[in-house]
Length: 117
Image (cartoon, rainbow, N blue to C red; front, side):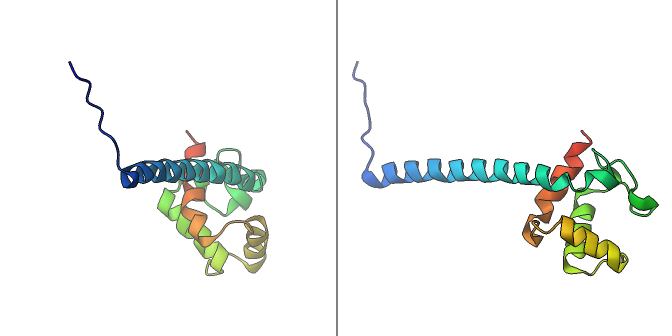
């Protein structure tokens, strides 16, 4: 029996390497944001609780009861200043969320929602 081994063209070899690099970047960037989310949420624990199960200042809803898209939208509104919260609460949240970009609110909301599990 002959063992047939197909010789890959240089384009196929480069494509294989490129797929591995993209996969590696995707894995490391996701885990990197998970670490950042953990650091970022440490600022929220005092008022919202370890798993988002506390009603902060008796006004805000429990984060653990919100849906992911609701929480993400709330975060975006806090960051862009369009939330109905009092100005001093907006300022406090903006300071605590200063490292959170509008693009990362979905991932941060997913992290918070997964805390209750």
